Image (cartoon, rainbow, N blue to C red; front, side, top):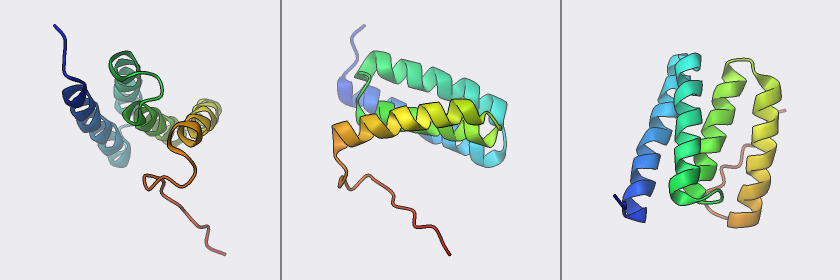
Length: 102
């Protein structure tokens, strides 16, 4: 069965939200399991550099970080950041700029 690209993106978006929610709840193993599945499925359905795939990978990196898997988190974050900059550009409105406090 062939799914519409917009529907796939919407389903991935909902599941991205669930990964984020699991991290916020402190359910790190569940967040990682879910996040790995969402990132792999998003890449398969939408492509490796689709913005929703990149968001899924970013959420997975956040789950890795929260669970203390810093090597995995850093590697995935760096790869995702490079792809986001290449695909979306540095001034894309989707970027969330965090300014460190002194």
